[in-house]
Amino acid sequence: MTRDFTWGGVNRNLKVSVVTPNETVYDMVQQMTQASRRMDPSQIILINGARKGAKLQIAEAVRAEVVAFFAWEPMATKLAATYPQIQVYAIQPSVLDLLRCIYFAPKEGKLGAIIPFALRDYYDDLEEALQVMNVSFYRLAPACDERALRELIRRAASHGVTDLIGTDDISAMTVARHMNWIPLRPGRGGVTRAFFKALWNIQHRYQGNIRAALPQHGMLAHYQLKDIVGSSQAITEVKELAKVYGPTDSTILLMGESGTGKEMLAQAIHNLSHRRYDPFVAVNCGSITESLLESELFGYVGGTFTGANRDGKMGLFEAANGGTLFLDEVGDMPYVLQNRLLRVLQEKYVRPVGSQHGVPIDVRVIAATNKNLPQEVQKGNFRLDLYYRLSVLPIEVPPLRKRKGDIQEISESLLQMLDLRYHKSHTFDDCVWTFLKEQPWPGNVRQLSHVIERLVLVVKNQTIQVTDVLRVMPRDIVAEAQGNPYEAGQLKDLTYERIEKMSHEGKSGAAIAKALGISRSTVYRIKRRHENQ
Image 1: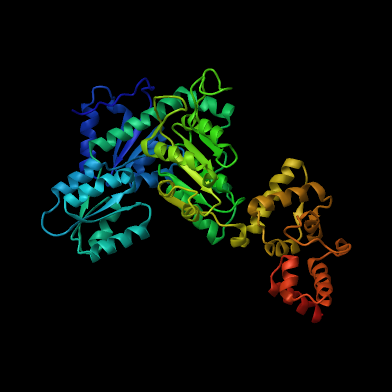
Image 2: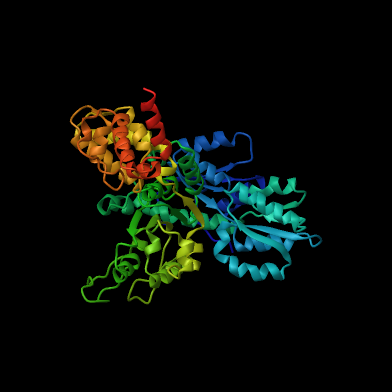
């Protein structure tokens, strides 16, 4: 029996749009909506994405103020990127859709399957069924990773696969390898799941419950992708991955040193998703004791322990329901709690401390760490199964020393912001850029930000000179100047005097470079420049 859609009290003037990948699915959705006793077909703008003029229809739907799009991949990702102000729900294939494809596949030849990431939670259970049903080649793959898909299809062909099951993303690549493509598309169940998921979010959004509470609890993501300053190749690749991963619901693992801006990136990813109107909740897993972190994450019922609130407390998973939970420094999470976190991620249920009942949750998790998690797994400090669960979509955030071309752009952006905050007006001398780019910056962008803030506060002249920077730089970056070097107006004069002094003391070029925090080639270049004068 077909399950009816119900709007559950949502304003019936709200409209949604369904963008189908072809005529067949268009007809199926049309029949479903017209047959439903509880859903008003006038609330649904149905668009066949394969027809000419589909883009124009989608733009008209946006002007008609639809609150959500439902679409099949890869159209869902494109819609989310084009219309970030509107929630987009990707309609994913189910296990039943996959099994149906296998059942009706040709019996002759070799059968393979590229399984979408949406089914990763069922992969272990599927393996046995796939072997019994004589599927000779099967792998999980993200639809957004074209390189990975091409490699898997090449491997399928090398295994002698003649018929390959997969989503629309692999159709052209499969045919190019002279294999038959068997479309894996969600049936009625996929549309039903997407609608009911959207209804929960739409209800809470338009009843005003979550949005009214957000400013009070500070559960807002302030940063957008455009706020991440830099145009180097390293940071551009990170931004491109964020654009691809953002519209999905998959778990993301951000890896990088402290101070590289992982939480800023997590907020930007949240604001790229259909969850952008729902809570963004952040917790530092390494700064809270084990017992407190457990109650913070999962909540507790009243009277569970001494000092507990009599009425109990909602955990952060529940607080983030419908939105994103950012687990910062997840590599420092106590080992005992890792098992509970794994179970919540698998079952989509959270059980408060002291309770016998689970609470269903719909939360997208973004985790971050400055540790090498594979090494932590080998040391026995981190669970292997949790690592795989978190690193579905990994992003490596580069340290500042690997994106030195961005230092000037970042510094100028910070200077402008901090001048405005402190009612000041400064500019940088051109010599400053050479100096800043030669520093190691162990604290990354956070450390650079602190240096710029100190400069804004202490420099009284309008132009910030190298000597000003040296005065506020911490000793762990640049060796403390000897004597009174600040009378020199230029970096080359100041540095040459120190190089000469250390050379007379018998120090090598490498030792001088290390003491000054610059490269050996820079030491020799400064010496040659003065010798030729």
